Image (cartoon, rainbow, N blue to C red; front, side):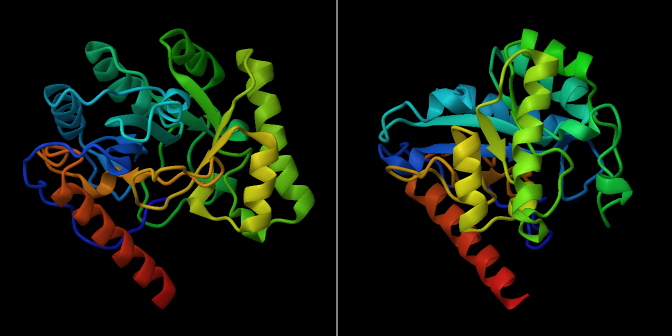
Length: 265
């Protein structure tokens, strides 16, 4: 889940993209819809994001491929958490129009149900339908990477060691059984983890994504990958100036603000 605090970023100052680790990043989306919720980006803004990346010649690559690129490369991987229906209805057609890949992290026990995890709606989050296995299979046919977001979307730090293992391994096994490929990518629900959970994720998946709002650094730990939260890029020029000093400064400022707010809470 994304943080609920703060305002949307303004467009970064245009300029030459930096050659350095700050120009590689993973973007996190949840839902593409007009509701205005903290997990939502409007369809027209999502299109503007794609247009901005294409206009700046920023390669959009799969998450696994992003990590094989040199640290000096300017590139982005697009990811979606939760497996919500709007991904198939709104995001997939736009990505197909531009010929761009993406990764979708699914909650394996909740496929074809809703995002009211464990039957409890999240305050301020619209309850939405989740994609079923047939629909997820359709996305794989379109070239999407399907990753794990656990079996039931719990806060993993509140789980026992056995429960953590079941959430991680059980989800991977279910995805392999239903889609034919064992997932290599994982995203921590709510960004909730500690060193033991990160270690468990490292044993199960090749890469695991957090909610730390930063670009990739020179040699990111594969079990602790940061991602940029799309909620902070909710205007039609928010991704212009990709990789510039102003772009990075704005992201680092937001990261520090989020961290301070969480420490205060």
